[in-house]
Every structure is written in C-alpha cells, then in structure tokens.
Length: 73
Image 1 (cartoon, one colour):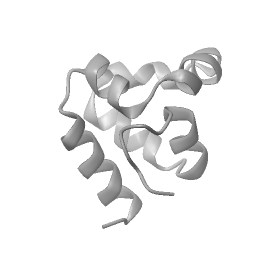
Image 2 (tube, helix red, strand yellow):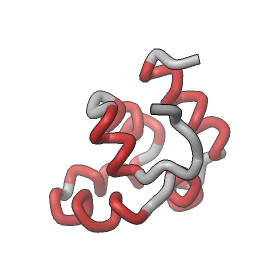
Image 3 (cartoon, one colour):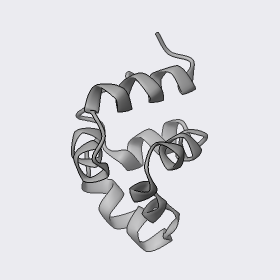
C-alpha cells in the first residue's frame, strides 16, 4: 500500500497497525484513535490530509514520517 494524503486513517492502520504509535508521537490530537468508537467511525472517513490539518502539522511531514516508520521509500 502506498501511503498518500488520500488514504483513510483506518485503512492506514489496518495495513500498518504499528503506525498508531508514530501518529501519537506526532501530535496529541491523534490520541483520539485509542477510543474504539472514534476509531471505527471518524478514522474511516478521515484522510491523512484532513488528519494533518486537525493535528496542526504539515501534510508532507506526516507522509514522510509515516513512510519512514513503515519502511517505505
């Protein structure tokens, strides 16, 4: 799976569950992913681009960090 800004957060975490910790390290806003209800609802409709905006971080930084943590180029 290619990690890009159009991927839903839930799809990313289904493919790379270890990236949850990476997201949590990037921003406290991602701590909501630990709530099972929010994870099943909000994460299914939220893209990485939207998540970066909510977390207040650069989308490029988010992509680079996630790709590196997943072992992708």
